[in-house]
Image (cartoon, rainbow, N blue to C red; front, side, top):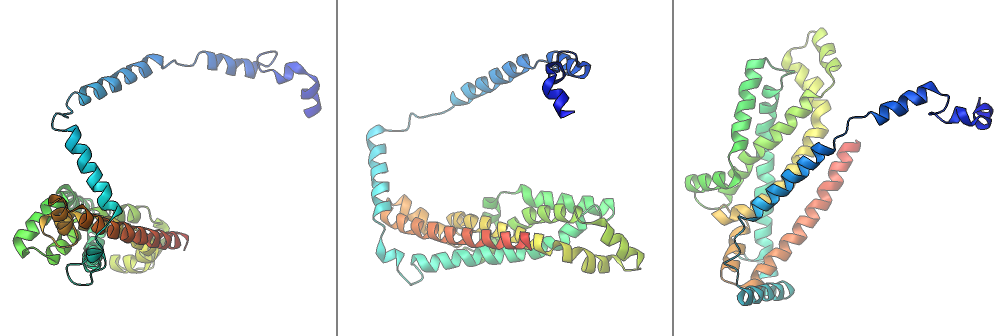
Amino acid sequence: MTATNATNPKASNPASGNPVGADLAKLYADRPRSTAGRVAITVAVVALLVWSSAGIEASGAKADSGWTIVGSILNGLAHPAPQLLFNLTTTGVPYLLVETIAIAFMGTVVGAIIAVPLAFLAASNLMPKPIAWIANFAIMAIRTVPVFVYGIMFVRVTGPGAFAGLMTMSLCSVGMVSKMFIEAIEDLDRGVLESLSAMGLSRWQQIRFGVLPQMMASFLSTAIYRFDMNLRDATILGLVGAGGIGAPLIFAMNAYRWNEAASILWGLIVLILLVEYGSTKLRAKLARG
């Protein structure tokens, strides 16, 4: 058959002597054109961009003072304050970074522990529909509130400090971690649960011996990913007095002490790079088994 096709040019040309090829060529020629739709979408996007740019206010920017501040920031980044960067007291960068890590880590652990029962209650393949709907609504309500609002609330309740940051991180972690846990639970192998149910195991025993062994690696990977997010959020929470390194950073920037702000920023950069590298390696190991 290969030799015949090679010596017969009509057989290799779909449009000549080949009814199947002719039909395909006709279908391709008669394909629906979407030029008008693409033009309409392009015009709409351009119109939105023009309309959005009209609301940009740049009247407050001053060329002379603006470039002076930019130069001061760059000079501060190039010359961080060593007395703050290598200060081992409670006001130094190392202590504040350790406090930030502790807030993010404990917030992740507490949030993940709370998220596990919520996720099982909200999983539609394990629980009745009304219970799953109520649990999903509670998780959605928790996720709706921004992290800054939680931070301000807990600072008012517990006072400023690391404990307010821990509580904020815990509650913020519950919403996202629960959502990821629910997706993992609903995608699990139903055959294992059906086998355990046929053996007469209760619902709790099915979860204990059928769900948790399958989900443990996914749960740990999600918790590690959330820890990365909490580490950045813990820095921001310092702005509202919830502990961590954010408060000294904003104080240094407001006072135009750019060398002190650069010391804190360099410490944060090194910390986040190390945590990112370690968490990526750990998540890859969990994914591969």
